[in-house]
Image 1: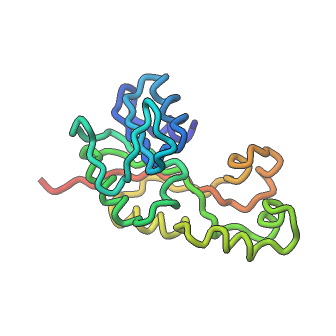
Image 2: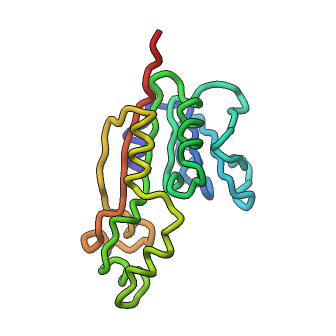
Length: 187
């Protein structure tokens, strides 16, 4: 959460947590004063504070722009990346910020795949398991067509996902954290 909060405007900024999963990040942001709308496409995630919605075509219930949109491990899952990013750009206020904490599965090597699956020779299985996800490179390129990327870093990821700190130094750099600003329209 440090990467996300370090890049958000000050509370009580309006934040959209797009693809919020269980909504824990949205809850933590609300607890520190942010005004958060949390959405997820999975109806099983519905609960107070989490709306069921697809980012493609999502309309803010208050019809107000967001100061920031957070995509934490959600963009690689969206079916139509272009549609999702166009929608996000339209939901952001002028000068609004897109904050992305993602997974670049294509960066995995054999050692990390073997460790993940607990068996030697697992890289083909890793690639097959992640075949339907957008790559980190595809996400960065798609964002760059719509936003101005302010910062981009490849960071360890899998140790956070598996909650195994011993992986931090051993893993390929599978994480991707970047901040992109909505481009200003000409006046």
